[in-house]
Length: 250
Image 1 (cartoon, rainbow, N blue to C red):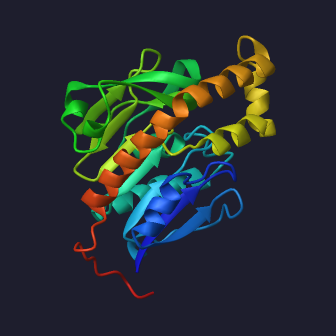
Image 2: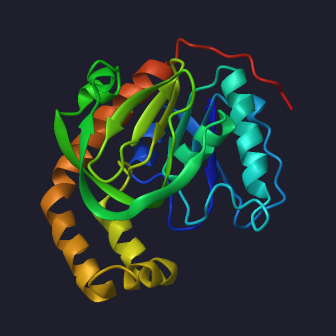
C-alpha cells in the first residue's frame, strides 16, 4: 500500500474532500500534527508523497513555531527526492520558503469566496487546465508567497497576484482552498481563532460570517466539481500505481 505523509498545523485544517479521493486511490495516510507534536522529525523518504496543509501562523515565525523550519527542511528533502509535493495556503508558503522565495503580507486579507484566473502558463498546465478561464474559489489568508526561481506562475486573483505555482513537474503550491466542503467552512467560521480574525474585518464577524455562509451556498457545488477534477488529475499524474518507488523499510 502506498504511503502519504500529511503535515497538519491546527485541528480544523484537514484534507477535506481530498481524503476520500486518496483513500479510494489506495493510500495509507499519516497525519503529522505539529500543533500536538512540535518536536516531530518527519522521515519523508519513507513516503510516496507529501501534502502540507494550512494554518494561521506566518511561515517565517520560527521563533514561536520552531517546527516551521523543520517542515521547510523536510519539504526541500521531499522535492530533492522527486516526491510529489502539494501545499495548500500555509503549506504553499512553506514550499515557497523551502525553494528560497519570500513570503510577505498581502495588501488585503482574502477571507471568503474570490475570483481566480489562470495565467497563460496555467491554462496549459496539466492540473490547472481542469479549471475554467475564471472560477470562484475559497480563500483564507493574509500573507502570500513570491514565485520561486524556476517555478511556473499558474494563477492570480485581483487582490493577490500569486495564487499558485508549479516547481518542476510534480510540486504544486496553492494559496486558495480547493479542498474545502461546506461543513469545513462552517466549522472554520465557528472556530474561536477564526472568529477573532473575522471581527477585525470591515463589517465585523457576524456580517462577514453571514456573507461567507451565503456565498458558500452559491459557489460550493462548482467548487466540489473543480476539486474532484483537479485532485483527480493530480492523483492520476503523480500517484499512479504503475509508478513504484523503493522506500526504506524502517
